[in-house]
Length: 461
Ligand code: URP
Ligand code: ZN
Image (cartoon, rainbow, N blue to C red; front, top):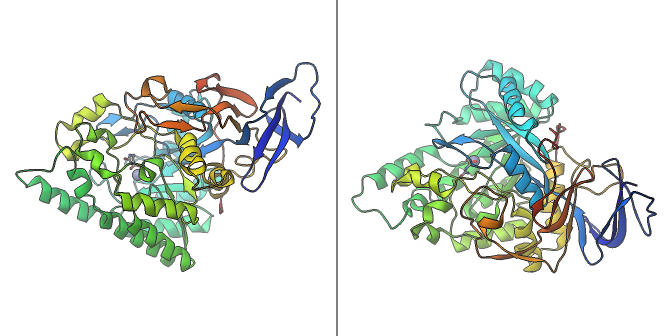
């Protein structure tokens, strides 16, 4: 064997036991006791540490042209940050611009990524130009390893919006070939009207608090409800990206009870931060859309995670630094939406889920690795520790704690939503296909090592 991870506590979605894990040619070769090392075998001592399948972030926007800027974590740095945080696969988006085919869009995004990525990546196809050609292309895109799509129920001005009819037909078409439609669900007409109402006011609430007030829970709850209904009508498969509030969660839960194929994710920012942050002078740093919400929503989301109504936690990484965020110049409609996240996903869940007693460590593995792999067609090659699969592994010392300081993170941002918070769960080693790509929070791999991963259709949990 090339590498043996010796004596760690192996944690998968279902099991926890002490053993050695052997790696050969980038694949997991064996799990057992006293695996023999030969001359030249690298031995990683993991005694007293956890050995788990590496994380998969199914929602990142690296170098995304958006809100008049480009998100600061590019394919190179974003995937280095992923490695430092214990993730070895990220799923980014190839978002169509008007007039471009899906195939052209995917090829261009792969070109941007391929020589730069430090860990493995896959793509969702973003449908923004619905026409007979786009519809025809879906079959080929799915067959080519991209069985999931993102459609935006908002962003009219960005030229990305899909209306209800487009969403319905896309759900129907994707279902024919085992594809899943993901949505950014907010009600665009309500948002526009609420924003106009606030813009007409002489006095606005402090900071950028109007950002929260104009994107009230019901604007998301209604849109999720509608998307779920359309998925049922089309007999399609739906994924709700970045779900943030109890109304939206209820819509998903009701859909699941009716037997509609709907799965939703939430993100660490929605499981921890609350909207009073927007009243602060630097509140605009935390503006995402949908926005962070109330304490009651945070509690409801944790309940959803515990009860498996939210079986995946992703990040929606879309890093804008303070200079980019400053473009808002006091106008709450002009804040670049998004935050860093990919580097702190695993530590956040380890700390706030496992160490805080909300989740077992097996559940953390499910949320951040096995469920994402199953739903998005990567399992068992990724998201498991089965022999013959990719040796994508994190080794975590439960005693190691890190006080978050943006200056010390790989992420390209001069603030962090968890600044000053102490998190466990940062890996002492991250292995991507058997190569150690990060040690103790420092990137040790190389740019270009990552590969595009083709995914299978009909993904399910
Ligand atoms: O604030 C967000 N969510 N930024 C990224 C773009 C999106 O809507 O997913
Ligand atoms: Zn979105």
